[in-house]
Length: 317
Length: 259
Ligand SMILES: Cc1cc2nc3c(=O)[nH]c(=O)nc-3n(C[C@H](O)[C@H](O)[C@H](O)COP(=O)(O)OP(=O)(O)OC[C@H]3O[C@@H](n4cnc5c(N)ncnc54)[C@H](O)[C@@H]3O)c2cc1C
Ligand SMILES: Nc1ncnc2c1ncn2[C@@H]1O[C@H](COP(=O)(O)O)[C@@H](O)[C@H]1O
Image (tube, rainbow over all chains, first blue to last red; front, side, top):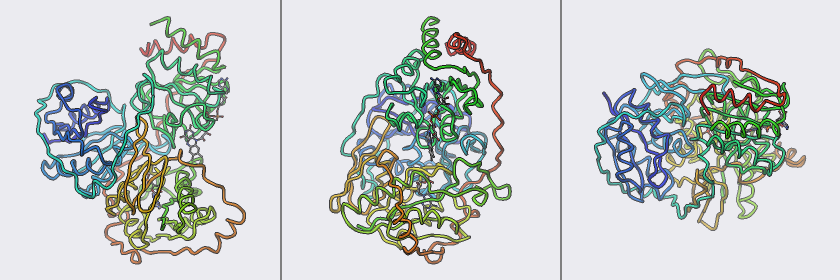
């Protein structure tokens, strides 16, 4: 079987769930090789990657790879593509993952597909476009297929791989060192999971009414271990920080469960959540378009329904 | 400072968008074109930088003839002039060939700073800025929520999952902006009138030294194998809250093993 490169996403050595998903997916199509970029690699990381099926792990753990915007990662992957001739390269379809994919595509003269929600035989990718209205299957026709796959596209399943390590020395070219990261600023995001990675997302919209009222949404989210999202109406009103906006001009999420409270379901909102596996809606207007995509909907006042739901969940734990 | 801002015409998201059955590309004739909303933030940022540092703002659009509507809007906001890269040979270009053609046009125009939106609302690939930086050998300063220029030095705040990175580089550079960065101005009546007289240069591929065999549908690096309208989601259950709506929702969650 042929080798498939998987770029590992990690924060200070902590591997993100999407990487385990990509390894799981890669196993169905070939032999996954994990590519580690940046500091933080160690026994824990190695064990985790092997547990999810990495046959090889290419380790480029110098600071240099992450001290500059995107370009060194693309160079690293381009070098591995040249040296190892993999059948495909998979990255997470996050904003940065897509940028890495884009530069790599130019470097290797290869086609790139972004926002895949599935990947099958022949690296044919499933995409959902136009706010979820159209399903597309596409494939790369030139070069090494580079595919950016959305988090939560598949469930991570463990299956041991050899995890053979190979060090890769990197010295980014001068061009790749043109945009230097001089400081990383971590903003408090609390204990909640990250929006795009979360298995469950609870979002509030204009119906929530105020910043203070978002506590109702947060409580429901916390009872489920979920991330909190918001519609643009809510972020524009500054009731909730902008980075939590779900939709066309916000984050795209694809969780197992999406709960929308006080959100009408404009197409731009649906564009960011329509591929959620299960959707629950609370809205007092029975005509709200969001009900069209609900698996379960409650027509009612969110100030009654949401706290009651939270209480029930706590009770049944 | 010579600023080029990349503005795309996209179909209005509010209308129904379709793929053409013949070549599986977006049917742009069937829908109203609007300025890619995220590009308005790019235009605004370009105008603010010009106001602070002097110079000129050029709009660059690649697209069919009707994209001139979009160009006028950007000019009405205050950009000085525009270049419209337009050629039948460009129809069906994917991200790779679009970035190639735009990079060629940018080399011809010349620039200190190129500013893009973070994503186009139709293709939603969000890769063009990175590809342009790669092709132009210029620093990639993408996903900026703040841009500061000081002489030939440029610094941005790049949004990340954990917050933001402070990034520094030297001009010329490629920047993309997120919608947090500013509040785009509305064109004034005066601006709209003035826009009608501003120069718009149309470039064909030969004018921009774009190789015909490297663009368009035939040169694409990927293909749509098939597409279909998404099957409607199976109709869900909708209940009216009779004082027990939360309990019923919890029952549903339990039935799906979420709790
Ligand atoms: C180019 C473009 C990009 C956009 N990008 C995005 C995006 O990324 N994300 C996004 O979300 N939007 C986006 N929008 C905006 C989008 O069109 C809608 O305006 C927005 O999603 C509306 O948010 P909402 O559903 O919270 O508000 P509304 O549409 O006002 O809906 C509020 C809903 O709450 C219900 N409600 C009110 N009170 C209660 C109550 N007490 N209990 C229960 N229900 C109640 C109402 O019945 C109503 O259905 C974009 C728009 C454009 C033009
Ligand atoms: N045809 C085009 N003409 C001008 N600018 C474009 C074009 N396509 C994309 N862009 C710019 O590139 C950004 C990212 O687009 P995309 O990579 O297609 O999501 C947009 O916000 C625009 O600024």
